[in-house]
Length: 628
Ligand SMILES: NC(=O)C1=CN([C@@H]2O[C@H](COP(=O)(O)OP(=O)(O)OC[C@H]3O[C@@H](n4cnc5c(N)ncnc54)[C@H](O)[C@@H]3O)[C@@H](O)[C@H]2O)C=CC1
Ligand SMILES: CC(=O)C(=O)O
Ligand SMILES: [Mg+2]
Image (cartoon, rainbow, N blue to C red; front, side, top):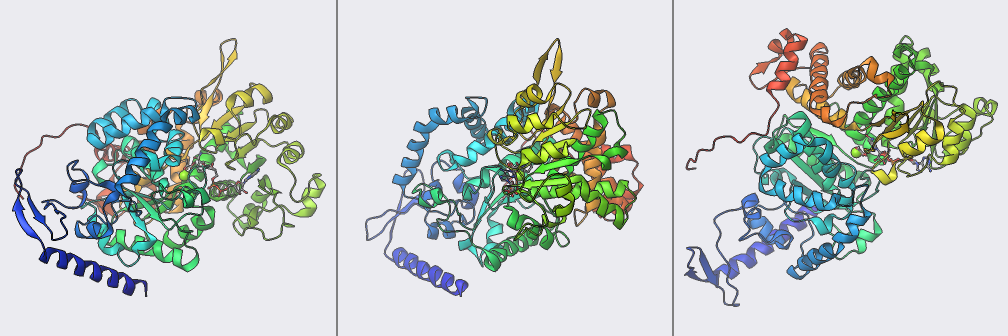
């Protein structure tokens, strides 16, 4: 039905075009291009380029003002956000943004100039990719917080003002039936990595609709900088199925579809069509799902993970990073990793990230306890999960099926002096956990009261993970954690914070507990192994590699994650671990000139060299012109 109407629209557009061509009179301009004067008095300009070339040509580019018929005529469909704007709207958007700069800079995280820095870097990204990535790689510690969390969150929030040149592809609900041909509008014949979002839960900032493309761009910046994926082979994708953000629905300058989100079968049909289209054009691509609301994150993962080379970063990448942190917290107490199943863990947040972490931690505990059904069942009792409605128990009505395995038994928690829906502070007070981990998206959730309660922890060195992003959503700051709970804690946060000066030359180490330490290596390892799926074993190998990366000395100092300045090295190690596991599981089918048999013969060191040799570095190549 939709298709039929679409064809009707196209054919009537074609008819109009033909009519106006019949009425056109040709003339030649001074620059050699040809113009037509139509009987209506308009003078169309003949251009000799199409698609991305026209967007990159400041002479002819109209950005969001290309009409739908022009987009079809010039192969631009999918290369721009779907809302067609008038030139007046474009100017209004630009001016609104310009005036907002001062205000936005004040809104920013710790760095008041973060947004201005992002703009400068973004302009460089548009002009010269090699130089952009050289700057990023050489100064990753300084600029990761600009192109990635926290500033990327602000960028997504302000995207309608910041948008200049499009980057990546947009597939919208309006494009149903067209995606298979639209993918050919992308200029690159080879794409290795796609990061796709539907904008429904961007960091902890909620539904940002089409503006969520910023997070896909930021993640792919790390793919290039950390994993050495060639920037010509990355593709950020926004699937615009509408938004339920009422502010955006009413904003005349919003760049996306101004309708409520598709849901149910209609929604799945759009994502299915997208997956089929990209894997048809690029059968070897890896698709990373990013920042999909929990409601869809798990369902889509289950739907595609055995069929396509894909993974969900928030569910699976975060799980691995948190697991590495939990194991680090055990080691930091001077205990062997095998003590992990004894840890009492309180998790605040039962969304895609929280549930992903809980499942991975429970499985790892069970494996350490002998990998039996009994071990799996007993591991469950190490977790207390608190969501927006308090402690989750079996007495909860309409319990989310993904959280059900972690619902506490009522009798058992009554013995602990707790009830269904108990507040976080009560849970911490009664459980006296070893670990308090936040993936709630609620800034300041680990209040003074909660942190005071954690002082009663039975652990010799309690661990606090305030993993929500961006900075203002962190459950607490390291200053709060160290000053309230005490100097002898482990601290990790999703967005970067400075270390804390504890006086007398002592430093309270602030770790960045972010999935950026895993997703680039998972993607690169999967690519180079040629595995057709991303298996649980490959993800586990990635997490274990990260957990083992820090030395005993570092861990005892409270340093349980690498500094971001080492991200290229840890990514290489993670990629090698993923490849090794893929080989062991007989999933590695090879990549380019190296086939499965040759991969199997590689030693661990040779796998590392293989990874390094396949990482792109930002060096200018020699260019030679050749006629088409
Ligand atoms: N550090 C990292 O690498 C990562 C961090 N995250 C962050 O995790 C956060 C959550 O992400 P998702 O799970 O996808 O979001 P989500 O929206 O699916 O889940 C949020 C969860 O927090 C719960 N919650 C809300 N208010 C609460 C409260 N007052 N107390 C306890 N729980 C509360 C909700 O009930 C829900 O279960 C986001 O801020 C995101 O940026 C996500 C992925 C990776
Ligand atoms: C880091 C990340 O993936 C998130 O906050 O959603
Ligand atoms: Mg994410």
